[in-house]
Length: 305
Length: 305
Image (cartoon, rainbow over all chains, first blue to last red; front, side, top):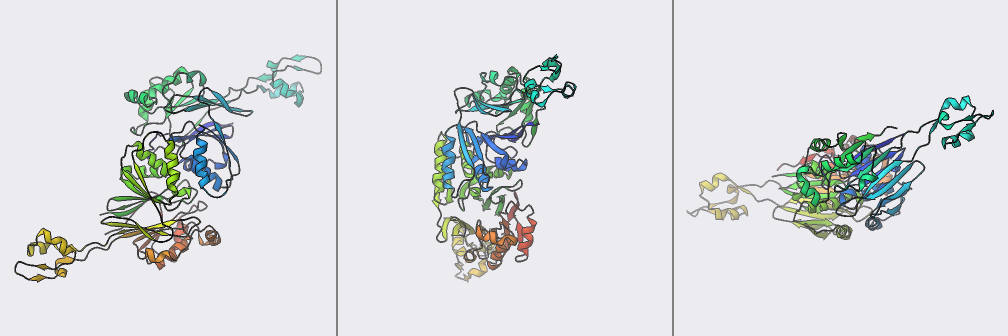
């Protein structure tokens, strides 16, 4: 079952000829979560052959234009395509009015039903959950209210060994209880302990998205040991002062967060348009955290089960 | 001196993986006119290496999203770049409020100074002129108020033959008058007629932009004999009824307008996303008007002097 991230855009405020503003799609077990929606997102979705109709949940980290200017175009397109879905938008509360004012102007009915969920910038919060997946928002440190997002599979149940079902003739009705931890008692009254019936579940996979943000240690506890971390690296160390002033991170900052949070893999992005060589960012980050890659438009990063 | 059109986007309402929504830049003698500004325009400008600072005049044909959703991003970028210019926007009057509401939300001062010029949808109107260039708007026929645009060099003055300046020792002060049609009287009192002093000027070049519009004969007189016509061709003839219903044109419609207006060259675009082969449009149009090409993203069409 997939747990994979596709980068649609990884530039900072000024797009370049190669990088679009921030947008990415996380596919968790067939749920397509759109994270940020910079200008051009719908074009990038087309290029990646990701069906518009799969987008039901959109997460907007903050209201700088390079993170949401593509939303009105995407919503218009969903509408033109006649998609009649609920679309949940998790964002700063002001986005609702910004979008609604534009939709009011577009004559003709809306097919999609937009449901806005205001983010909490004071503390981490669970903002989505179903049986298999949970999503949390958490405040990061930027020039305006900004949230990061954490996507996690829920704790999985153990797997029952196929051979024991046959061996002990276990009825289907019992399987749920065994997965939940019960032992099994055979018709002869013999107790088969749970650990003989099951194998441990695979570890729940997780992904954290942190942009835009200055170096901010309070997030470490929240994103601890995620399989994949996307952390902004707008500047190199040579521009540390400017990074601090604009509340952005350097590549080294991102790597330090990854190291302290003991994440498995780090993707850096949101590179300033003044640089045209992303390998400089990789090099700087790898001095601190080896398993770092620079985000690349159109690339998909898979996390195995 | 250049007179050339660069296509930035030529899709219809739904962008495809190869075509962006409508946007193009016309360079007339170094003046860069941006015509429509669909989502992704700023990215396409980057790709074409057209400097943002050259954009001073923006023409928006109508307020369907695929013709203006890129404007807020472009304005934000001009602002971020610290460009301190007047930017003139020629558009339906409602655009001002739509953009202003978004700008009001973006905190921090504006560097650029936006000047909105409302279009007239009742009759053709001169909306821009300087010594060398004139721009006219004219109503076309669509589901909402929409204008086409006509860009023309002004009538040029004759050229003075270099050799006659020396031969008759013509003072610089006289050249302006001779260009305006005067004869020249030598010190000896001999009248040299104007046609011996000058060669006729090159023909003023012209370009017309007509999208979105149904087949609409009243525009023929206005765009008569232009060097280059961009006319929408959203559908093929097989969808004539749907074209009529949605107030769009077929490739054949566009070609018929080109033929009746005796234009020199026709570019068709705004193809519906349901087609993925633009040559079908070219083929259909060429049965009526041979010198037709399908618009191509990133391509520049030059008109020689």
